[in-house]
Length: 72
Image (tube, rainbow, N blue to C red; front, top):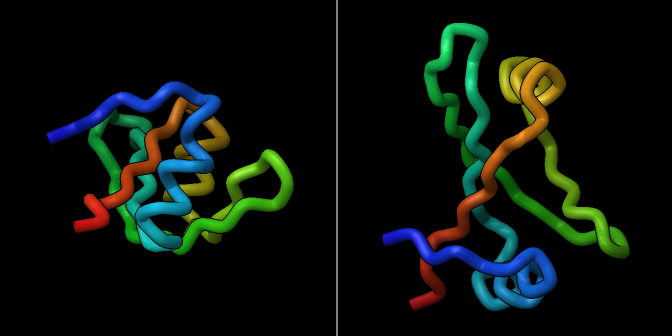
């Protein structure tokens, strides 16, 4: 199940779920690309490492999704 969270609450919700999540991007041919990430906050910026494919996809199509598994 997916729960939409207002942008203002993302940091609060992410803190409850911990640093482990998933980064979803889209490749040149429209296929989804999903990788596990460890995210952290630096001020108001969400920061995470990303490999070559994820970085290339996000650079070309910056609308990405970050998903966290449920806390419980």
